[in-house]
Image (cartoon, rainbow, N blue to C red; front, side, top):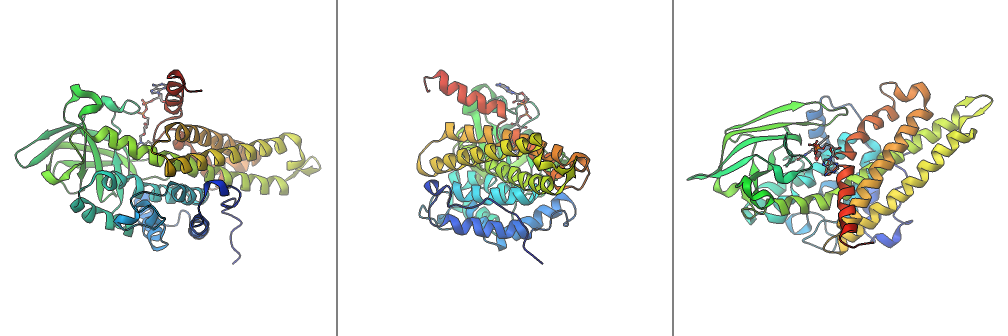
Length: 395
Ligand SMILES: Cc1cc2nc3c(=O)[nH]c(=O)nc-3n(C[C@H](O)[C@H](O)[C@H](O)COP(=O)(O)OP(=O)(O)OC[C@H]3O[C@@H](n4cnc5c(N)ncnc54)[C@H](O)[C@@H]3O)c2cc1C
């Protein structure tokens, strides 16, 4: 069997400015996993996610979700994640399958608060399972009435004689029902706004937790967590009381750029599929790629994709080399997810009726890309971040 024509465009040579020597090998490993992944053959979303996590661990890719000091891959900064490596992996996986990409991302997003703020005992209990792909991660911040406005959260944490009690609801939680650990943000004092937000580690069999799964438009294990007098021992407090907001934002700033990288991967796959189709499909006497409108769609998409990739790896490089990169990260997330959506929409258009036929690659990409403009901070919230920076005097 010949190797698939994709993943494509993953070279680290063209953006050598942003990469270190080890990144070429990361891209190669990710390309192999993405190219060999049998999309849609693992059954329901939960089963497929478990299979994906095991495959990602076996290929060594999950080693990039935890810093070297706690068992992850070596890259010269033992206490830090390598955001460029995370982006290269997501760029490859995004070309293959949104669910595979999510399985990878959640091992990082769901464990990074523990890496950042966990005690030695918490790291020893949770991180090895994350690396093995056996303990799936989840990051529970959003609530029915607190999405973009995180500080409005109502999930309540109360001290008890033996530890803590949680009451409230978290929703839109990726890996709900399959996770082996949930990092849950709750408030110890609703009147204190963001200063009351505190992080906890919840395990699936903790008393008082119930999980309801629901479906979104593309394969993705997700659901609602209900805490009804959920009792936790004292050692499940994660970090300092009142330190949850900072911890959540630090985690999101590390992973937001990787969402943008996944969007680049999805867009790249769409460009590949649409170009191949437009070269082979003939109408009105010539290949449709020779019709100027179709050629222009592809040319615009190709240009925006390269612009996205530049923004993504600039942001990832900044994140790896500077203490903060809020502006670069917001630009990358905003532009790459919006541009990939435009490109995928054009890829569907170029396929004509086949573009909306269930089972076609571009139809799947059309559903997969949509949520990336919403989660980990909507496009509008990225604009809020960028405009606030301008209002403070930047630019
Ligand atoms: C597939 C998927 C997976 C997810 N996974 C997770 C997860 O694992 N963990 C987790 O905690 N959450 C997760 N989320 C939730 C996600 O982070 C939220 O959906 C997102 O933050 C938006 O919140 P909301 O849905 O409540 O929308 P709202 O905040 O109610 O926003 C509704 C609309 O108003 C706009 N808006 C809001 N405030 C402003 C403003 N100040 N200025 C301009 N426009 C504004 C928004 O951009 C949006 O268009 C996931 C969501 C999806 C779709």
